[in-house]
Image (tube, rainbow, N blue to C red; front, side, top):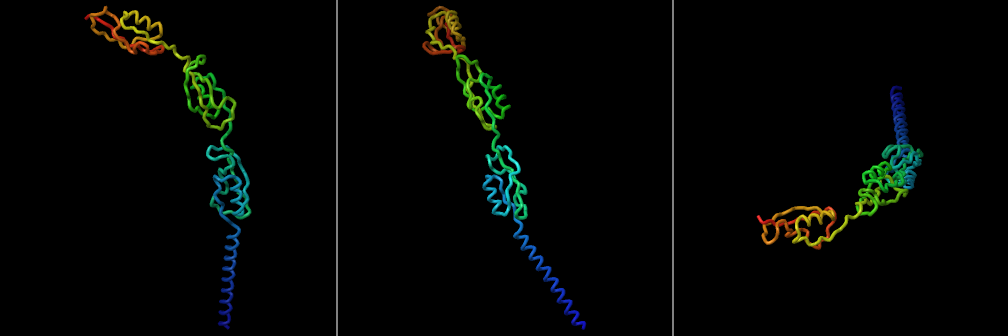
Length: 239
């Protein structure tokens, strides 16, 4: 009798153990087929992301659309659950999609100083690009003559606006006459009348001419000079 009872107990234990193992195995089998890791979708375009999710057994749903300087329009910025998380198949993965750079229109900075132009562009989310400076007969020195893109043209946030800035009217040009042999005072008066300045003045002993006579000058005669330029003189002295 005791032997029979021991035999029945052993059989019952074996049955229970087998049943537990079977259930665990079935659970692992079911779980392996019903759950899957979420793929990494960041940087993919929306169509690609949805295809990847479909292959993994999930459904992609756009949750947010936001502007981004890092990803172009239609690219995935983020998603939840994130990559690597285990999710039951058939569940939704919520997507954040880029709208690209925010759009703005170029403000008019014509006539502003280059500093004011930079401030105005910054307030509209744009930046000053290259700056070229040229003479202009009517636009004051330092003021913006033209811009590219033109005022009102749609631009992406952060994009540059190139500026053409005035140097003011071109200075008057003057062909320097031959001043050698003239009295220094006369030469200085003539130069002053044309907006030129006396630069270095050198005194050289020369008894062959009257004192304070121009012996040399730099630049020499025939040279084209502009208003404000300096002219160096060598002037005679008898001692």
